[in-house]
Length: 82
Ligand SMILES: [Zn+2]
Image (cartoon, rainbow, N blue to C red; front, side):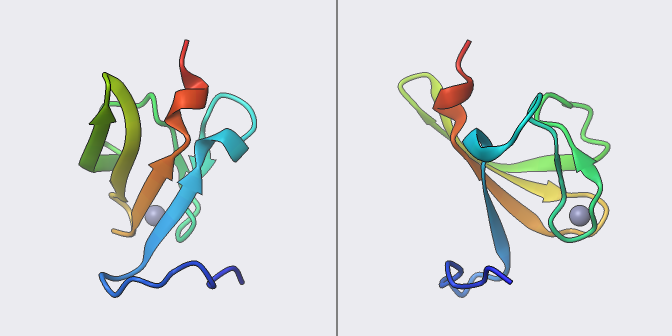
């Protein structure tokens, strides 16, 4: 469907803007559909591959789904600031 934005050759990285997610921030893996919760730090469902921090605020997070192995780039963290 929405493949227009994927231009890099590093493989399929799905981008996800957390500001566009309703509810508590949980979202389904775009590939296998498993529910991923950013607050789940158990590493059962996903692992953190890369973290980008700017001025003590989490700016970007690349995670990898443990079930299907796809990588998801999370953006939009400043909006979740509490
Ligand atoms: Zn998955």
